[in-house]
Amino acid sequence: MEISNVKYLSDVIRQTSFELHSYLKHGHLEKVYENGLMNRLSIVGLSVKTQFPIKVFDEDGTELGNYYADLLVENSIIIEIKACRALTEEHTAQILGYIKATGYEHGILVNFGAPRLQVKKYILN
Image (cartoon, rainbow, N blue to C red; front, side):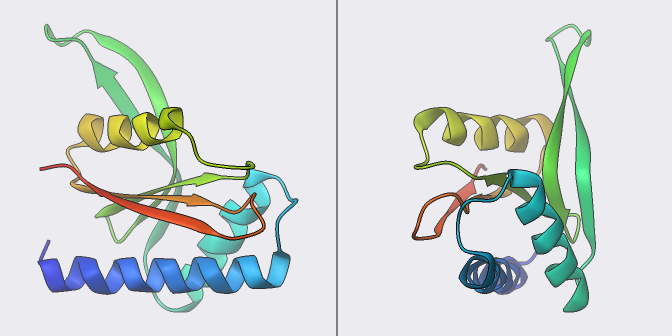
């Protein structure tokens, strides 16, 4: 995906997350924010898949398990949503694991659970 398009999508995701957080504030379950972000991104015309399945394989090709990323936007950016007091290293490891397992290069971690929205973008290349 072209860098300018990724920057544009990232900006739209960040702004839409901010608007959703401003409206709902913190205190809801992750699923509420997931549904809200999916709805708002769809309204602006982006392709959004929810609970996108990610298979994890061992070196020999054996399937080890499945993840479900919260959102996949425009088949290029994985979004992982949290509703917690603060993001931790485990949350970072989770989004990086999703990016690595899928082969997508871009992921965004969004925490709606704090009084101030937290958005972090990750690139794995």
